[in-house]
Image: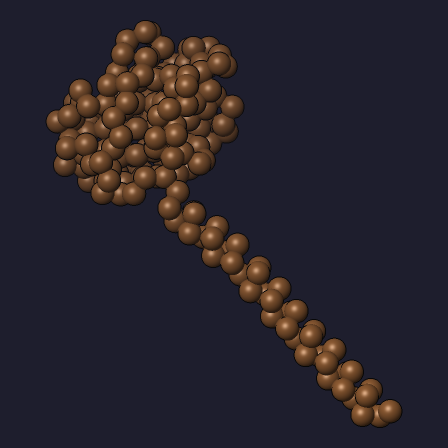
Length: 178
């Protein structure tokens, strides 16, 4: 009888160890996967910036490939986003001080909301593009906003910044563009 009890205890112990190890491996896999997806978030630095054509608030059409030879700061934002709202005054200041070879494009991803009212209230003068069909947002694989791509004069992504930028961050990233 004692041998059966010892065998049962050993068997239960081995099963417990196996279950605990299996659970640890299972929890590690999603962490690894989520880390990989975070690292792959958005387009890679060094990639060619996908071309797009969008309308501005004023009805003009802007096509990225028509800006070849110019440096581009491409910002994705929404009117409801607190960090986006926080960076807008500094983007406006940067727009007024920037080099003439740099173009600032702010792609709004919620054009169904009152974008013009937001622009008027915040006295924004740089071009606001409306991504009504979410095609540019998808092409640039935007997972969080604000996200800004810094694109060189050859159309290559040189840097990406996720989160609200300060004026210094904008100047620093733009100064590295060729």
